[in-house]
Length: 174
Image (cartoon, rainbow, N blue to C red):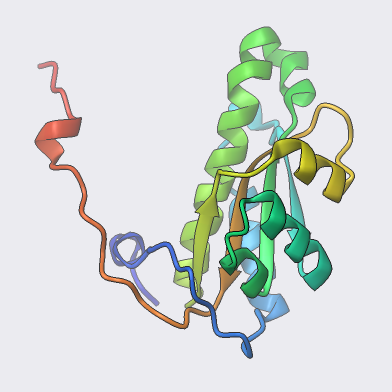
């Protein structure tokens, strides 16, 4: 088992998955538990996660996401949705417009790291036709898909991408 720093260092977007390696239910359950352990505004968990293992539905998600084929190939897609109404009850407009979105994306981030810790890989997808995903998943009114996370065993390990230097992204106010 890796420590946290190694887990983060080994997280890469994977666009080729092993087609004959399904995700074990125990591992998927552990990933989902970690997603739900993520911090959220007021502990409201203003999000909903749709677990998609059905090939036909993954095909439709792929089409809704500009035919990014790895969505179709990965054995699992998690669709992280914000639930603004849940958050607005406590936090008003800011909860509706921001906190619910943050809750969903933090949960997706925790899931992405849990996937790596479980020996698998993922790719975060933000480019998709929101209305097509809403229709395909029959989401209740007001629930918005904000991220797709394709999950599976990697068939390739790409070279790490370059990152901006810390000096370029930080400002210290001492």
